[in-house]
Length: 62
Image 1 (cartoon, rainbow, N blue to C red):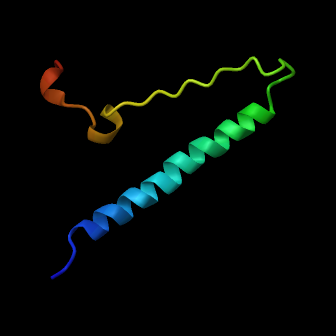
Image 2: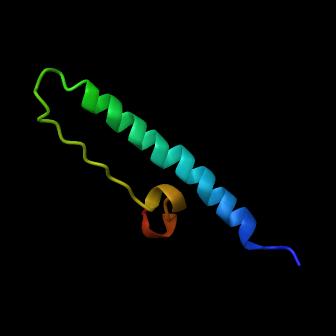
């Protein structure tokens, strides 16, 4: 019997590798280049499920 969860786990692992690792690397670069402010930087990450599902045009006019 084939394990149906395997492709899902592989997709999740690949997504985490790209997204979380990329975010971590960017954070490290931004921290290293604080522009001479002495570490007074803030990094705010904002996400939305809208990016995954796209717009629902039933709720718009036109």
